[in-house]
Image 1: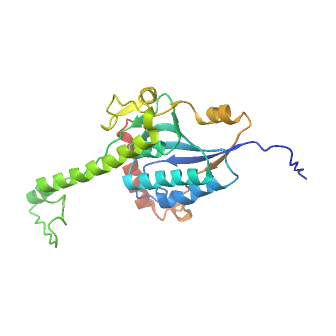
Image 2: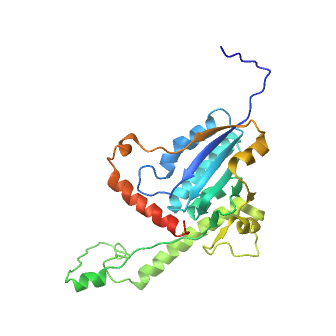
Length: 265
């Protein structure tokens, strides 16, 4: 029988939420706001944590999902008055850095890759191949912009200009988020929003992170040697484990691998 003594203080607990992988990919275990909502809600609510520690390892992904997840983290932090501290592993780039910037503090390993504060859109053009094969492309639309950037038709200047305006607007949203969250910590003498990436030491000099540190020792330094950790993260659905979504998950895996490869990982 365990004796509970009210005059003995409980040891602080840190809730650790793992945010790993590309954001908004097609796989069933992909990071998205709807998938992470119950994970984050539980982490903030259960046991009155002293802090939320985010383990981040992401090359980015959907700007919308990055924004939604980051906004949810901020809302929960303010509602429960719980600080959020991010710890970057291999990479927090593009949308991965968006998530890191949602934290109150950001720490990383010496060799962590950070930044890529930009927006990218990629595709392919197959109209020459179709022409060589004698295949005729037939598309009928109502609305002159409905078939914008059709990969099976020659690229149009007006379509490219329209896409560039969209990307510029998304980029501005990203910049605003980083400036709002990092504030005066940022080195204003440098252009930090070109899409460039840096290792952690340089990122610290630029104000993109707060220091070099690992999760457990940093939390022990802050909350004491006996601090407890409670872990949360996404789990694969039961049917996914038995192979019912192998094709979808395989495609998502290739996309995610390609996203990491951009940073030499």
